[in-house]
Image (cartoon, rainbow over all chains, first blue to last red; front, side):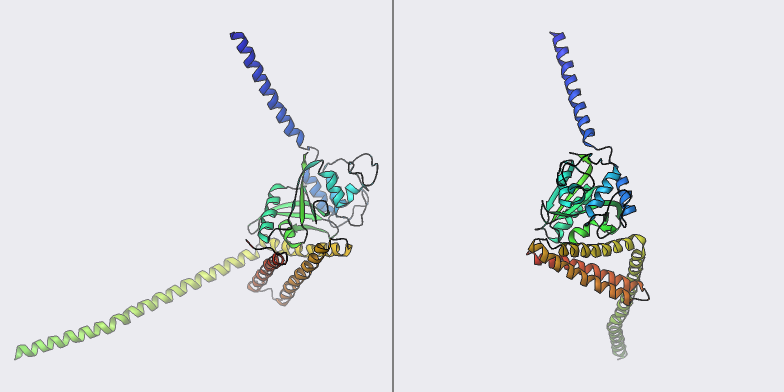
Length: 207
Length: 155
């Protein structure tokens, strides 16, 4: 009887240990260790005001093409093939997922953790609170997109630098192409522009 | 008789004393209050000047200058990004209209700031603070106006 109890306890302990190990493994598997946000940001800082046509190309509206370049430099692997321009299962230069904001969203929402929200009915203070919420959840090398609906993303930026200043608290400097800049204040950008939908991507957290 | 004279003299002296007391006490008191007020004003002026000094020091710090510049840069980029969206011509109608209004209002705020900054050739610090405070106030008003445009009630 005692022996049976001992075996039962040991099996239970083993089971618990295994399940814990499994969950730890699950957490580490969800992080993309290949992606180094600071590398993506460094590339953004070097090329925000120019076009790296040696390795890439200049798109007509270049914001998403630029963000994709940053992601690749940060460690994201491009697809090896591209069945068709608009195939949302592949991401590589000259594909819609690489250079078009809305297709970029369609690809990356399946790859990494992200969250989107309509801000159209928000007052200035609600927008401000939402912006602070986004600021608390993103980090260097993450991506923020803006649009006029959940399936109408139109613009992409990458988090370039974090600063804590005595007047505005934590500030994220965003980098972008098309209107080149690396000093966009995310908190203000959300309130200044008329975009009504915002989505951010935690680029090193796999889905 | 002599006693009577003495008594009336005493009454006279005490009368004078009472009158003197009644007249002088408020004067002494008012002089004291006046001195207190002057001291108070001096203290207030000193605090004000100290506060202004602190404000100017804060304003000139690299940290604050960066903050101001990033807010101005963001306005410029926001205008340019929205203008590009309008030029693309494929925004839904309601967004298109709002983008145009935002471009117009933000551009006016920036114009006011830029011309005021240009006018402050001597780079007077207290004037620069005024100009920047006005810019931030105009921005807040702009957010309020856009809330009103969208029929949003400030909670």
